[in-house]
Length: 146
Length: 146
DNA sequence: ATTATTGCAAACCCTTTGCAACTTA
DNA sequence: TAAGTTGCAAAGGGTTTGCAATAAT
Image (cartoon, rainbow over the protein chains, first blue to last red):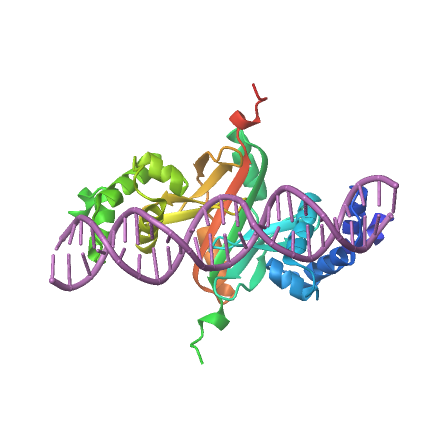
């Protein structure tokens, strides 16, 4: 009952505390930035959205790592080998449609999770997860340069 | 009729020639190595399989790039942000079940290509492709250390 | 006080690039 | 011999690490 009244931010902060972490302004702003962005973004974009120009990018990465450890961060691979970061509800994950030019990303409502888990287990694998991302050129980027 | 008698190696060499490329021992050995490996591998593993200890890794990358340009190379992202390379029939692609410890990878017989293309086009995207990879721990890596 | 967090700077890893020397067709 | 390929060496880009200084509980 009490947990139902918890926002995602509060839930995350609680998880951080319970593993011995301390709550800093950086952490709060970074989590809020991820919530506001609501789509995969680079560490740099996250720092900008969090309005933390003085905070070093190392620190952003370290805080993203903390989010990853408590199971509430998804890493989204791009075709060029870099990655974006996205906040998820603990234990959840998403799939996206990503423009390979502007990196705009929208969530897709498809997931083969159950099927893939079944196949992987049949092959003797454990601790299974998966990624699925769709890449293309969005309408905006496809229109003739003006 | 004539093309039916072409092996994948010959097909690829022909494509290379027709775009002005020259056929070197490096190219032949790298392609053969990819065919023999028959699963995603790193540039370094490919050089080893090709038995080219004297060939610089730059050259391997450059030849992989050529394969990519003629549409017969797939890049497989790992969770750690690096990538593996795999030969495909021109225009084809695969999905895999990959051990996140030993990087052993097997092909999976699933593909949502059509559905995803439809969804992406409905969102106004063009030049669509996608990745899907399943990660886990294989039986070998999961058994207690001996 | 104790322990986590931050900055600094350098290292890291894979990959790419510029340029000159060398092959291949 | 003209154009593609290779090696060399260095740069690149995103990410990580060690260490000392700083800040949160």
